[in-house]
Amino acid sequence: MTPTDLRSDTVTRPTPAMREAMAKAEVGDDVYAEDPTINRLQELAAHRTGKEAALLVPSGTMGNLASILAHCQRGDEVMLGDKSHTILYEAGGISALGGIVSRQLPNQPDGSLLLSDLEAGLRGPDSHFPPSRLICLENTHNRCGGAYQTPAYFKQVSDFAHAHSLKVHLDGARIFNASVAQNVDVKEFAQHVDSLTFCLSKGLAAPVGSLICGTREFIQRVHRQRKILGGGMRQAGIIAAAGIVALDTMIERLSEDHARARALAERLGKTRGLVVDMGGPATNMIFLSLADSVPLSAKEVADQMKVRGVLIGVVGARQFRLVAHYEVDDASLEKTISAFQEVVG
Ligand code: TLP
Picture 1 (cartoon, rainbow, N blue to C red):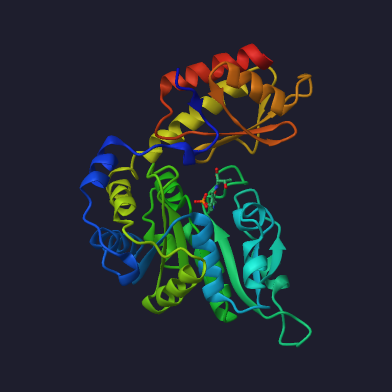
Picture 2 (picture 1 turned 180 degrees about the horizontal axis):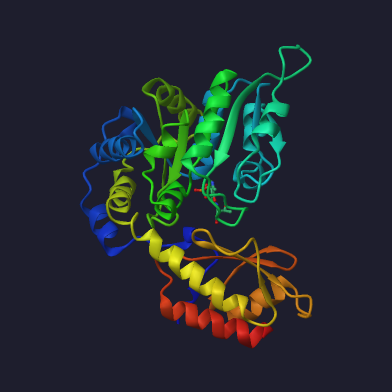
């Protein structure tokens, strides 16, 4: 029996249409920029986001790292959220490999950074300080429960940043979830940032790949960083082919994941032993905690759920993350609810 896997939307496997496109993909050596399928995906990504150019990288982590390295010199400072993926889950790459200083500001419940915190975080010209260079945003925001910020907020941050000669990078791993949830075009966010990365391999269900988008000049610099990081690929058109199917066919359906996450949260919220955190799902993620009455730890509960064919993410001693995605259907929701009722109800 295939388990219901709610650990992440990264677990999605390529669709039959993706596999077919991969099998038929025309390929070439991308280090010579001669892979026609990669070139087409990059043009499509630039077009979708309204940016001049785009570059395929193997992962969201490399997308953020290469972008930040292209924006900053060693010793420069980046302002970003204390719950950002870049700080929590990217192995400290910006400091380890880039010598970049992070100024971590408190993420608000919707994943935003307060303008007052950004203002207070700005460094002056005094040579005691690392120079402020960049602000990083994340939308949707993973550790803030999949919450989203609006284009109006992006404009405020962008106006502030540009008034102080700072650049703005967006970790838009799930920017299409933010776009679908608010019914606004992804360009509405992209126009306010200097660079963004988005992922093909999360809710869009492609097997591999993220795109970095920005000006042509920025993409040239990021291309060099990708090379330094060992991310220059060869006949990766087989990956890009799946990415094109993802962009063409998998975006609108994200609203189904959001609806299922809401439905699941509502039912689990009524299950004895569980508390839905952060006011419920804004997009495809549900964060849940164990009620004080439950004697088991999150890990023990996850183990017992696994025995019942349901995989859930443990993100704290008593907290879980559940993520709805393409492979989670209505029957998976029922199975999840029954399993939780057996284990903690
Ligand atoms: N997030 C993964 C884990 O690393 C936590 C997940 O399961 O959600 N930005 C954001 C906002 C992300 O959520 C992720 C992946 C990344 C970047 C990195 O993408 P990859 O895994 O492709 O390096």
